[in-house]
Every structure is written in structure tokens, then in C-alpha cells.
Amino acid sequence: MTHTAFITGATSGFGLAAARRFVAAGWKVVATGRRAERLQALVEELGAANVHPAAFDVRDTAAMEAALAALPEGFAGIDVLVNNAGLALGTAPAQQASLDDWRTMIDTNITALVTLTHRLLPALVARKGAIVNVSSVAGVYPYPGGNVYGGTKAFVSQFSLNLRTDLHGTGVRVTTIEPGMAETEFTVVRTHGNQAASDALYRDASPMTAEDIAEQIHYVATLPPHLNINRLEIMPVSQSFAGFQVHRG
Image: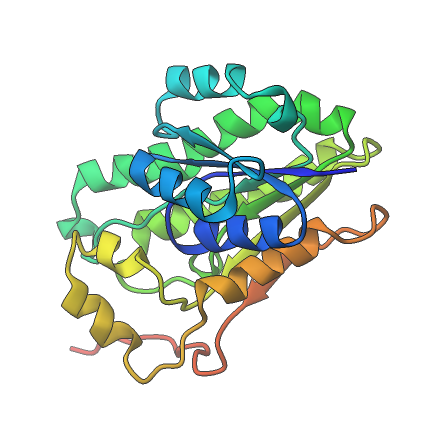
């Protein structure tokens, strides 16, 4: 039987790599994202029989509902929901941060994620499916400038644990993937388009790749149905934990 994965944020980074990984394993993929041209390129790359593109902004609930209602029969049975769409905006300390950036992160990383999850839960329960939520080490370990981004990812991780509790007995599995440093478009988005800042951050650091994380997403989604990975925290070897900061004076 062919399985179907619903992957948000599939136009770049982890989501794009995950779409490729699932299709390579014989899955069908509903690929969502704001950039329709990138979704179309993915369809051309992987085949219309394997990928259904759904172009919408996850913050737009009406557009989300319309996209779900328009799923063709071959893609309508969702076995795995990969809540990957999310972003960080800004690196400034809280007292200098943009409130608009904060609200965008909350609307995308929290509100959109819970809206889509709520909408698909009945189908996932019926199919004894799985939910893979992409969180971050930023939800566990604070760092300067992490403020609201870290808060949103802490929500994702805690929401996942509570989902797991509520779904007890249904057969639905829930996992959070919590990556550390991985080189994607993440830092370019966070710095509002500063490619030089992104290059400087990852230079000589041997960061993880989108494919590394996609492999983990596929791994937890395809475990035997009696196994659940609650959370998977993963970092490159080059990254570890910083010490406490102390202000003197």
C-alpha cells in the first residue's frame, strides 16, 4: 500500500529534502509552501504521480482549508503529517527586536502548526498515522537573540508531548525533531536576506545539511507501528553547549 506524507514548508531546506526522501522511498507527498514556482519545479523533478503541490501561506487558514478540500483522491489519505514550516526572524535582543517579527514567528511556528494539526487529527487517528513536528534546540537551550523564536520552538516541543498524551490508545505516533546548526536558507531568512551573514555563520563549521534532517524525519515516520521516538535532538559534532554568561560591573 502506498503511503502519503503531508509536508509543510516543502519549497526549501528540511521540507524540500524530506519530500525528496519520502518519494525516493516510494511514498506520495503533498508538498506545501508559499512559492508556487518552487513547488512546480518539485513536481517536475519528482513526477506528478508522486507529488501534489499545494501553494498557500500556512498562516492563511482559509487558503489552508481550500487546499485540503482540493486534495485529489490519490493524495487525500494522509499517513504522516510533517509540520516543518517555520522561521526565525531577527537576531536582536528582545529590547531591540521587531514586534512584527515576533508576531510573524508566533503566527507561523505556533498558530499555523496547531491549526493544521487540529484539522488533520481525525484523519490521522483513523489511519493510525504519525505526526513529526520540527522543533529546534533553541526550544531547549537559550541564547542571545533567541527570545521569541526559542519560545515558539519550546511550544512545539511541549505541544507534541501533550499531543502524545491525548492520543494515547489511538495508535498515532508523535515525534519532535530538534535540530541544531544546519545550513539551509534559515539564516538568510532570519537576517532578512543577508547571505554574507549566513555564509559567515556556517563557514568551516561542518554544519548539518537538510538531507541529514530529512533522513531523521523519514526514519521516525517509518518505524514499526509499536515504536515511538518522543523527541530526537541532533547537532553537528562541531556544535555543543555554551557556558553561562556573567555580567560584571
